[in-house]
Image (tube, rainbow, N blue to C red; front, side):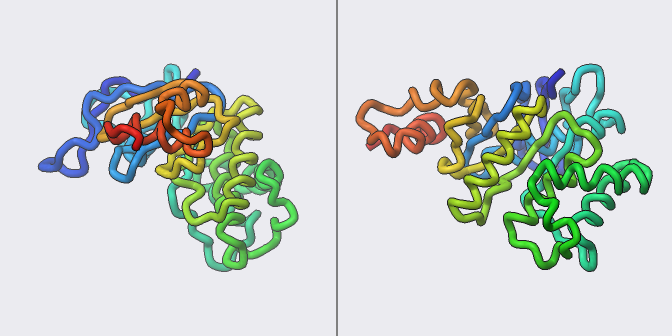
Length: 247
């Protein structure tokens, strides 16, 4: 099963212009990167896919499950752009608390929290207060919190923003490892540097419209022949999202 957005429209307020209008998209298998400039509609699409927002029109489903159901939110996990460290809580306590908020019993959430931290390579920091973690470590706690209740789809909104190149590489390797374990991962970003060669799929979004969805190789093929090898991803991104020729 996969998340399907079927002809959805959404606006922030009755008098506002729709960010997405009659928008359809199915989250692919494996690891997908959603590329697009700021304001393209990436965050709105992820929030609709996660059931955080309900569409003004259209439907969002995960198999037979509607996005406004508790069962849907059990299968689908969303990590926002900002992961907040909860004052006084350790990494394990924060993950466990999140599981409890999602409907798990206190005991089940506590038992599952250590396994979730192990999946994001944070067990050595399980007893570290989250206020003392680095930004990259806190993002990994955020992923663990999203996975603690056994989600099958993970939606990440700009998770590498503010990370240095080494932190981004570690985080992408982590996400790829999760995707190889039968978890669908959709990671949104506006930074072309976040295009991992190992990504199974790339989707580009511009002005609320999907301009490309396919393999990383097919994405790079959109770069003009004149583009330098080291900048083919940037050239392909420009061609697909800005209607501009590479120069």
